[in-house]
Length: 180
Length: 180
Image (cartoon, rainbow over all chains, first blue to last red; front, side):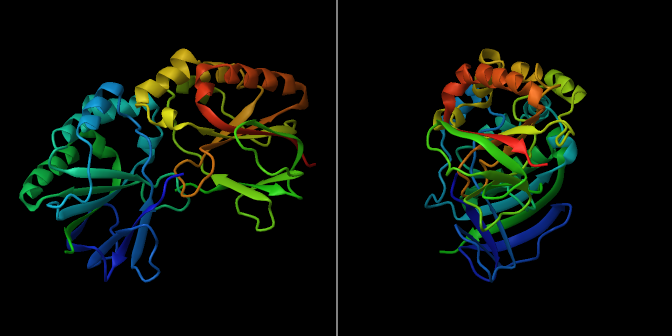
């Protein structure tokens, strides 16, 4: 139903790649730029796309906290970004809903950890798992001011140390700088 | 990630349409046959497609019951079927996970009602909400023996009487007979 959000990796784009690494599993071809838009670019080295969707684990009390600090993209000072495509394992997807929620929040505090950074890190969760032929489950997207990059590093380190991250079988990290 | 499941409505196919009705919202063009396959047919009047996915609401205890009676498609005697594409409202998708679960199961017993029919109605939930340009959220698919059609009618009537169905804003029903 939603409009696609498309990331073209290649020689041009509205975000310059400052660092690219494979965190887990196979990487993506190295690119100099990522173009965030709404259509695939045939000249791109790779194209990833997906849609925003409904909440999957967040409960009503947690949603109130999130709604109180809406994640706004394209803030004037937020000239740093990150695109982190991830794929979770068959073991993760084979669990029942309450079992996945138990790992994600009861054991990993994913939502609680993220909430501590709402004011300094804007984020968007792009879903692609249910798209035919998609190579990742999610394309996670972040924007922040240069002075908050260290806080973003903290956020990533905390999440990667959780039990939930044991279910991540592929993760690629691209750090970005907005093209002015 | 998953392979697409594709339904082409038109003048040919492996299932003959015996009845077609719009239950809620706009219908689909009337067709004589539905072809269930893996690729779009350019000659079809309409094409709907999606993928199977992970459980969204089912908890571990409920999953045990479902796993004990796996839903097997293409059983020899199951020559009757139904394709019921549905779309839920923005009010549904705007709720937090626990709020949707409360409507779906605590108030509507969707999983419990369905469990009573596992042995006589094979079913498959095809997801398309997170696909770009999809016109339905789900394509629900059912197969049963002719002598169990009345039980399938019961199942539909029970589900349509639940609070959950108040959130269905589009529903089309096609009753089918397998082409031998």
